[in-house]
Image (cartoon, rainbow, N blue to C red; front, side):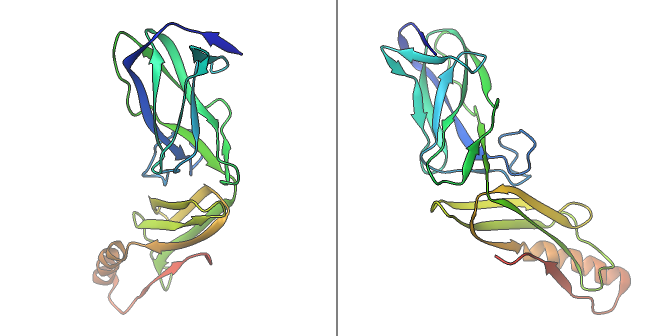
Length: 212
């Protein structure tokens, strides 16, 4: 279903970034939890506030396609209430749409709206592990972990999060592909020094990481 609208004011712009919702929390830009921008080819559309009726102007759908860093920008009609959502993902990209995920905005006069961020979800699986001392006496929280690689669709991704207090981490919704997982060595060294100062001895940190 489409809805005809009034003329477009060039200043009425909506922009943002499309992210992969790595941790399933329905927050589209929780980068501390590993969310990352998805790259090029994702089509974002303008809808009514219910997200069901597409907006058209002069016979054309109001859409934009993300660039290489997952950013989009589209023009909206003068005034009124609208929502934006991801309309389609690139074929073979390894991502799915998240039903019902949209952001509502109210356009008033010639205002621009930035950071209207949206989510998709990877379909490959999850990557999990833990960080701790060799004797498992101390698990290391707040260690930065970086997952990087390329999806089967050829899209390079990098996702970063910190381990929980119990030393574990979990990257969910990762598209099928080839990846490496690395901890921040400085975080490990700092915490291992504190551990050694507390207990003495020669404990060596190890990382329980999955195979790429």
